[in-house]
Each structure stands twice: as C-alpha cells, then as structure tokens.
Image 1: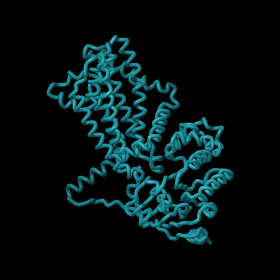
Image 2: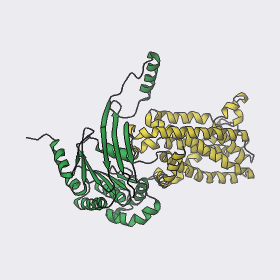
Image 3: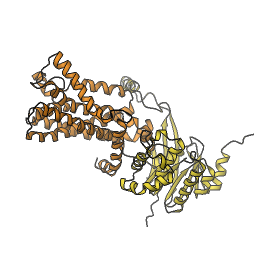
Image 4: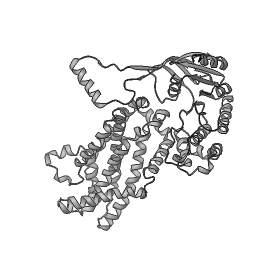
Length: 256
Length: 260
C-alpha cells in the first residue's frame, strides 16, 4: 500500500510584491541597473512584500476531505495554486503525490469564441485528460451539464451560470487522485449546486483526496472531515468541522 | 532539459488541443477565414512586384518578380506571424497561466503550429505559380527538408525568448514588431543576396533567416543545391539558440503566474 501523504506543506512562505503587483517597467529596471553600477550599492529600491502565506504547515491524508475557510485575501487560493504548481513558494517544502485535478476559477481555460463542444475537449486537455478519455466521457459530461441544446453555440453567448456548469462538468468527470475545488457554488442554480455537492460528496467518500474552499459553510459541513481556518496567511485552527466554523465566525467582530 | 522535454511529451494532447484552438480562433468570425493565409503573402507579393519591380526596376536574378518575391514571403511570413502571435501567446492566455498548471511552452508552440498550417496553405499557391512560370523541378527539392527544419527551429527559439520577455517587460510588445520590420530589411526579401557587399556577406549570412530565404530560392527557383556551409552554420546557430532560449523560458516560467 502506498503510505505516502498526498499533500504535505512544511513551513511554506509565499510573498507577492506590492509595489509592482503587475509587470515590471523596462525603464525602471534599466534605471536601477545603472544606479547600482554608479553607486556600487546593492538594490536601492527594496520592493515591499506582502506575505500571502506566513509559515503554513499541514498534511492531508489519503482519502481525506479537507476544507479551507477564511476571510477574503487570507491566502486560501494561494494554497491551491501552490499545490497545483501554478506558482512556487519563497521558502518551505511542498510535497504532492498523485494526479491533480484543479477547478480554481470559473472559466479559466474556456475560450469564449469556441463552442461548448469544442470547449469540453479543450478544457479536458488543459486538465490533463486524453482525447480518448474525453471521447468516452463526453456523453456523461454533456448530460451532467444539462447544456445539450447549446453545445454548438460559442460560449461567449452563455450566461455565467452556464459557464460554471460547463467547467465543473468537465472537472467532475476527470479522474484525479487529488481534487482541488475553489468556490464554485457561488454561481449555478439550486438544482446544479445540489448536483455538484452530490458529486463532491461521492468523491470525498472514495479513497481520493479532496481540498475544498468555500464560503458556503453548509457545504463545507456536509463534505469535509477536517477544516483549516486561515487568517492573514497563518493557520489559526485545524480540526473538526464544527469547531472550525465556530472559530471562523469568531474572526468577525460582532455587529451591533 | 530532458525532463522538460519528457514533460512536454506527456502534455502532447494539450499541445494538439491548443494548436487546434489557435487555428480555429485565428480566423473565427472573419468572412474569408483561412483564405487569409494565402491573401497575406499574395497581396504583399503583388505590391512588392509593382513597387520594387515595375516602379523601381530592382534586380530579381532574372526571375519573374511574382515568384521572386513570393518565394521569400512564404518563409518570411511564417517567421513574422509566428513572432507576432507567438510573442503574445503567454500574456494573451494570462487567465489560463494564472490558474492552471501546464508546461507554458505549449502556448508559443501552439502559435507556431498554426503558422505551420498557414505556411502549408500558402505553399499551394507557390506550387501553382512555379507551374505557371514553367520553373523546372529537381531532386534538390529534397533540401527543403533541412531548410524548413531550420526555419521552424530558429523561429521557435526566438519566439520562446520573446514570449517570456514580454511577460516580464510589457514594453517589448512594441519593440518586437519594430525588430521584425528591421529584420525584414536584413534578409534578402526585396533584393537578391548578391546586392550585399562582398565583405559583409559572411556576417549577413549569420542571420539564419537570410540563409533560409536565400537557399529556399536556390532550391526551388534555380533547381540548385543549397550552400551547405550556410545551411550548417544556420543549423548550428539555431540548435544552440534553441537550448539557450528553452532553458531561459523554463527558468522564467515559474514566475509567470505571479507577474502576469
């Protein structure tokens, strides 16, 4: 049996530059190089850093369903991005064992000019599915999405709910060892939300690993066996779902 | 380097899917569709023939102006369209790059893949033109294989560089088209290569695009063998450049999601 932990985070730090949250300007860089040459000093303009993650350590066991909750900007999505190797940490160890399926943002990977059908194949490929795999699952994906009528419509004509349905349908039919889900229940109607929840619930019951980020505390309660509460890039609580939700709600100042 | 290529191979399905997407969306909602792949070199050929041929009476090595210009525009437009689409390929997919993991070089590669298709479509016209002007064919056409190989490898190397650099410095968005313009004059498109002064020939031929265009003409229009020393030099330059730029791309790739 494989006893390796699917996900291990060891004292992970991740910062973003505040001064230049966006791309650099060429003139600025060239200017700095000259300045350094002339004054023979090291970097004169130290860019201010914002630590999105401030020393995070946790482990996820095989078959576990971990929820991550926290306020906006607490660092939840950064954790998922680090797991899926979209971005890399400043320091610390991250070990990931297994095939990852990530649904980090609605619509990432879908192309507005292409039809629903074309997008299923494109998005499947982006998620690492083979053409054959998608061919086999195509029927189920279409059925799950409930978008059969609009398969040949360019998806720029879709509503945001339809977008999410298409995206989630593809993700839910890939067969990863580790599934990462970031706030997908915000859109989609009650009916589709219910379908998603059932799907995730089934996944969490299997021996696969699930990481679920949501502000929908009821959904977290239903799906996760363990929850991390993140605040300002640090883990403030790790443990049972009920206690985690209580801790999370206590983070907000009592109104009135 | 081997691990990069291994990973890229494991993502070949994605590469195919992205190339298909590139081809589909490039001409989506345009009435003439992929006819543009032909219309671009063809209209440029007409203008070049008229302005440089008829008006200025430039020399064309005794060839009819249309084939003289079209033969160069074929390979040149592959390079320049790859540069314009490929250099922007990473930033144009910022949404994808910021959210999903996959080897990023698939994006510039997909742009190149679409350009290869354009090249093939545009080549059909070239074949028809050669037939129309009764240009004899020879077994030397076999040398088109190394010539096209150099063209693609060299273009890929340059595009890997520029696509990564444009992410870091957006200013380069404006520099790339300018460089391509200048590069066009540094290649034997409008004028034949014998117009370049003798003492500059050596340096002139260090430009792999000059080698590709000149030898493409030799092989197709003159039924001659290519200049092997030039082919070899260009191949060596392209291979070395490819390793450097691929390595550079993979180093820079890790920070793409944070700065894009």
